[in-house]
Image (cartoon, rainbow, N blue to C red; front, side, top):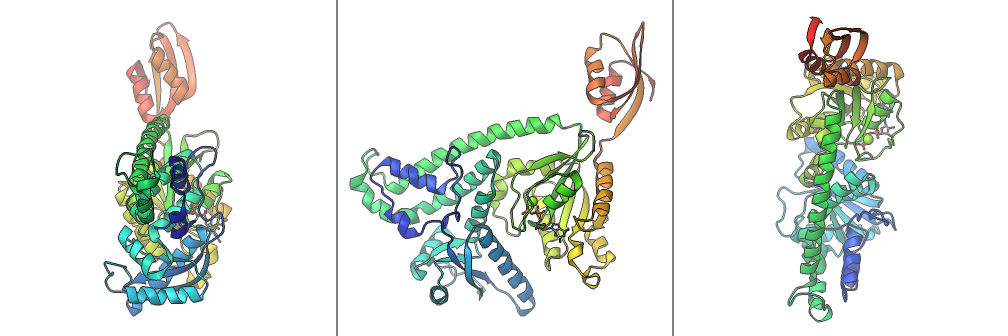
Length: 465
Ligand SMILES: Nc1nc2c(ncn2[C@@H]2O[C@H](COP(=O)(O)OP(=O)(O)OP(=O)(O)O)[C@@H](O)[C@H]2O)c(=O)[nH]1
Ligand SMILES: [Mg+2]
């Protein structure tokens, strides 16, 4: 592993003589909800990381290798660590035992040690045994790509929903890795722990605790899902826009500009993990817009799965607004990643618009030709702009409202006084243009979402529309 705030030696030294200590051990790895708040790796002393990108790059792919390394360096920074150095390691095929190969790993460790590192970050998904073997060969704590992303998520999760979702992903990640942490614990366990079944080792006990906690968290998620579903159903009559895109593309900045919200938009991957929804229309919400968690290449499947509740917002949108950071040299890859993830989320067929953002960061000569953007937008409406350009943002706002606003219908209807539900629906969902009380009932001129107007009309008699 590492949820890197503790070195492996410290884990081994953790007192194991009683169950309370084990609780503490779990608490240190898990974002326990409650008084203490989530564990925040990296908030203590920062680690000094040596970052290694691994791949089978050809010369022409050099740019991509360097970009991937830069991305990982930004992620390690976002988890609160100092980077003392980095390197690209070329490997055609991963070594099954140590991923890097023990000779290469030892050489990397030497360079890392000379630079004053106390942790290795490897841009790969390592199996639990590969991590363990690498730690043995190098003498360093090893943090793989998934652990880094989980650490960043853990630091940035603010709402209860986001915290629970990250904790599930984190515990699932840790579950198969506790053997590695607990090897020494297991040796000690036999004689020291009393309140356990016969023969149960420390790591088995820890696994049982994690399973219990996971079951509890999944129950909480199921409850939150139901509440979220109800909330979304409550907004069923609204047009809904979801902002999506690669992390750091400028989604939150655009959301702020579109809605005059003041959400946190820092130059940092995964700044947003919590879906925030605002009204896009001036007087109350017939069109609402949601800012969502950013995408990244090779997003761990576990996080995608555990963020299901948050990501449901995207699937149920009327219009998906894809935001792209044009100033990133790899913006086209970011766009491919976004398209692939939208497909995976079941949102590939939704109505879509594109905002090519951060245009102000490019000199005119550096800007992609309109035909290139046209092709990338695949025939959908698109804008190239800066989120700081108020006029450009205003035209995006108008277009989004237009595209997402539910289809409206106007009608003149006579409703019998007994049709109380339909009369309530008039006031709840429609704009009442005129009304007249006559002997046979209430005659109303209404303008509202087509499905509401249809239900009202069915309860009375249409005079017009
Ligand atoms: N120059 C310039 N900077 C921008 C623009 N839009 C966003 N930024 C900056 O880009 C950085 C990331 O912006 P965010 O709005 O947080 O990006 P995001 O897509 O919400 O990122 P995550 O929540 O991390 O996925 C911030 O430092 C913004 O100030 C723009 O149009 N021009
Ligand atoms: Mg954001």
